[in-house]
Image (cartoon, rainbow, N blue to C red):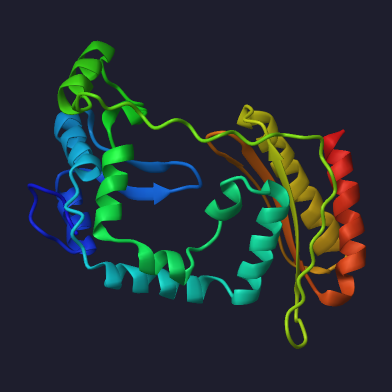
Length: 274
């Protein structure tokens, strides 16, 4: 819908506009429990860059055609995930998180949710969450600290009187690890099987997990793909969120190889943990 004080532009036009001002932008990414906006620019363009970032985040028009936006979400949901996969994901999230908000936060919005959102809902959410006291600004570069702080204090406004940031959501309760398994069968004959292992952990430094991730990825690729020729794809990832860390392995295999591959994953996981 655009930003107040700026001409209306298509996304391609906005990218060209930002590039012409030497801004390399990330126009917004929403994760499970936070949203991220950012970019980079030459140090000499610090002030105009921060002013544009402020306007992008804090001064949106919020008057777009919601029916058009809803259809975009539906098209993405339809092309990026199959109904059986979404149902399997929902079962897994409910098994792991129970009634915690994260059980729903990791899934695509349902038609009921999409259809019920109004312009008033968008504006109310923006007023509640998109305020300077509820933001964290990270800056890396060749800037003098005192000048940087003065610039940020000048550009990013104080919150309206009486505003206080929303309370943080309740954290996940991390209990001793228990084995939980859910299987979802697809209609017809399956050409491949996805074997996923997920670990939800307290927030921790990422460096040790990067070593584990890389070591486990190399081990599984060597044992499953190179030696057994049993996997179509092997991935190992770690992600840090506001109140937890997610570590996961995902292996796509031929149905006849599921038993052998599962045992390799278990042995590899135990060996890497040691």
